[in-house]
Image 1 (cartoon, rainbow, N blue to C red):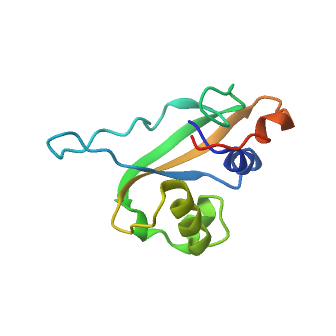
Image 2: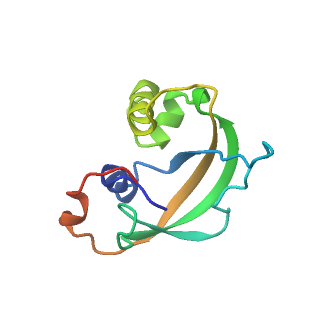
Length: 126
């Protein structure tokens, strides 16, 4: 799973155990299944094409509106409170639209490879 470098740091620290990703819809308006499945492990990467720095096990996946984020959910996302999450979401996706459907993916770190600080020095949108 690809995260911004700052969020990878929060994953590795155990401060981020949940992530929200926009739900995609097909041309008929049907929901495209989430790419992440409970019970499977995935690489944690600090950007597209970057090497794995850890592995995570997806524990659960469900759908909800992004506007349903509470302070407790924002903390699981690695933020101090819901407003900090909303601000980050708006920066990442260009706007805050509370009605947007998202996949809520809860996970836990299974192992971490040694991390080189240079991995986190790069900034970009992935």
